[in-house]
Length: 412
Image (cartoon, rainbow, N blue to C red; front, side):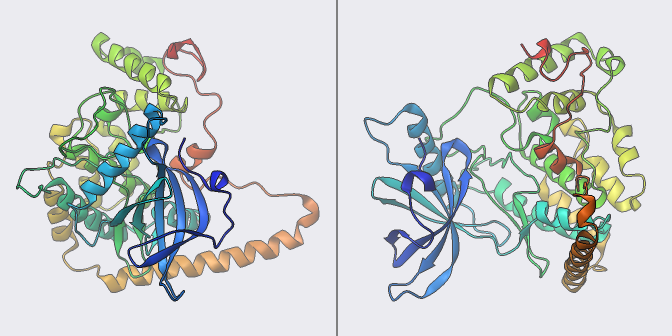
């Protein structure tokens, strides 16, 4: 079992361990990370007690004879994440600062993001009924593309390509500071060619499946183009609040029956794998949508956007990897050419400042209205974005092309 704050029984402010000239003070248990690891928020302190900023800690018990296979695998994956991070050095990628073994536990120390997650920023703008401007969407997308280009083209110490694929690009793993700087986090689920890497024969989405590429959802091979697809889904949500893989209505039986027999078998296998892996039942919606959507669906979802962003999203979200951008460098270059210097860091700061100001004013107004309507009972609020709504409130009555409920026999 992975380490957890409850297991430690530590109060806020307790010292977890000391290493590398710092003491690590426990601040908050952030819950389970992937591979059974625990995630903590901690503060570093100097030997004389002065604070030196916040960090994130991933913790796992030491491998021992008494350890189960799950713990041994989690320990190996943590070591792999740290070794991979040593090959990445880019301002747009959060760093792993070290790995320490203390008191029977291994701790990976991760840089704490300076900014706010896109998930939280989407909540702020969604509460006001607006979304990111097309130019800010492109500005953020270009920075993430540059970070992905660094990762996708990284080589080991011997000059051998590492073939890194992040596999978990979503709004929770991209952070934007109020100065407009974007950073990509968490390569813990990445595919790569590191020597000694633990591999899995099971092909399924590794992160939030509503940001996964069609090939990832349908059990195919993934590569750098899959990451670019996921970035396209993020950019679509920033600009429209919509999620391509979660349509307003479930995939109809007509669309499902239009698939070839081979394609339908592939969908069935993908749903079975996801079910056996314990994924949410709503993954079935995403799999069917990934198998049936067309370029016309993307065109319809982006029809109110400027042409430059529509063209870019159309390529990023093409069903076939061959029709997409073939590299992050190509994507970043196109965005830079289209923006032509008309949107600068100062413009990003100004828009983010407006978002923060409107959110603050809006919350104050809502608090005032809440006091006036206290006797009327709690008000209901719609979800801010489709994808974030899904994480907390899955569609209860959805039926797939076979007419079965989410818990029906089509998943057996």
